[in-house]
Structure formats: structure tokens, C-alpha cells
Length: 331
Image (tube, rainbow, N blue to C red; front, side, top):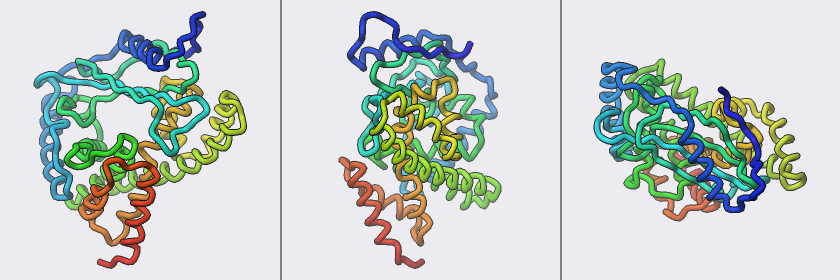
């Protein structure tokens, strides 16, 4: 059965967004789930991915990425954890220069490869977007059969991405840290395949980098356009107009559609845009810095100098200073 989306129909209006979000969460957790079956991918695949993880973590250290315990063991060895993330953004607003309004992360005590949401109730006054996953920066993030079955480029990227989140590497506000770690993980994955001389997967990693740059460029332009629309129309009318604009930004539109499968576009809109800003705000800017005569380990070391209380404004200035510093550099 496809998920059903509806407005709240209860005569009693719930004003506390946190309470409504928790109700939504409880509905989600009580919904039907598909639980992984140990061995569904095979012990050989899990073993191969375990070896890959150790190799990639060792490689990351050569770039100044200190390894963490994330993804360090297969499912079944000790307690595992799966995560359900929810983002809520006030209707008619976007988290352009600040973090999303409400962000929740709930750990599930057993790995679930996919959480099937039977019904989502719109939170009055908020846009809601959710995502479920088994890869995150925590020692309880275990290697699942579905992760082992992923393409090698994505697996390498995820391993490096989650290690970059370790506080020994980056300890920044959530939205700034994601915006820095996401392009660095992609850059480090490409460097991994470059050093191995794996040209086929290097091309795939480079293609993913190029797509990320395009998504970043399009998202920033789209958000500028969307903010102006939200300022001049009611939230509902603005949503319709912004959704009609999405196909004119093809790279971002493809990602948007792929990642909201099972969710209603108008319900997720402001929350999804705000979520994506946290991941892609600086993707192109950092990727362009990496194209200068600047070794990746040096770029990572420079970015580690970001202040722990960094904001979008201070990060913009920080990246601008790096652009100036290395614009005339030669190898």
C-alpha cells in the first residue's frame, strides 16, 4: 500500500510542533517494517566490505581523516542501531542562513533496511521531511547486507564521510559540518580511486563530484528564487509555484524526486530544501578549492581551522579567504 498523506482532522488543534512530531514518529515506528535477514547478501559480501572499510579508513588517515568506530563491525556483532531522522521547517520559510527549525534523530534498536510509513499527518504550520538509514557516525552504525551490496564508489564515500564526522576531525554546528563533510567525502573517495589506479571507478567518483557541484549550484539559485516567491504569496500558493519551477533545475530535481519517494512534494518542500542546504550549501565552493594547486590533505587541514561556532556567514568569509589565499598558488 502506498503511504497516505493528509492534514490533521482532529477537532483539537495541537499547537506544540514537538508533540505533533513525536506523534508522527510513533505512527512511523508502529508501521510495518522490512527487517534485514542476516546472510541475505552473504557472508562473503560482508567480509569483503569489512576488508574495504579497514583499507579505506587507513587511506583516510593519509589525508588527515582520523578513523572512527563508525561502520567498524558487521550486523550481528553486538547491539545494532538504525536511525530515523526528521526535519521540520516553518511553512513559507527556508533555512538559508540558519539551521533548520526542528531536527530530530531517533535510534531504532534493530537494523531496519526500510521503514514503511503508512500515514503521515501534516504538522500544522510546518513542512516535514524524513529519512531513514543505517550509516551514520556512531560506533553502533553496523555494516548491513544492503550497504555491502552498494556500489563501491558509494561505499568508499560513505566510509570517509562518516569518519570525517568524528569530533577529532570536525566538531561544528550540524548544518555547517554536513556542508563541509559532504564535498570532502566525495573528494576523498575520488582520491582513493586515483591512488589505486582504478580508472573506471575514478570516473564514477568524478561523475558523482560533478553531479554534486551541479546540484549545489542549482539549489542555491532555486532557493534564491523560492525565497522571493514565499515573500510575495501565501505559503500554499508559493508551494505550487516553487514546485512548478523544480524541473527547470534538472540535477537538483532528479535528486529531489529520488529522495522523497513515498512522501508528498508539497508537504516536504521547505524542510527538504532546508535539509539539502545543510548538505550542498558549500559543495561547489569546496570542490572548486580542491581544483586549485592544493593537495587534498592540505585542504582538509585548512578546513579543520573553521571555528567551532561557525555560521553560514562566517563560513562564507572563511572559504572566501581560502579562495584568495590559494588563487595564485603554484605547484
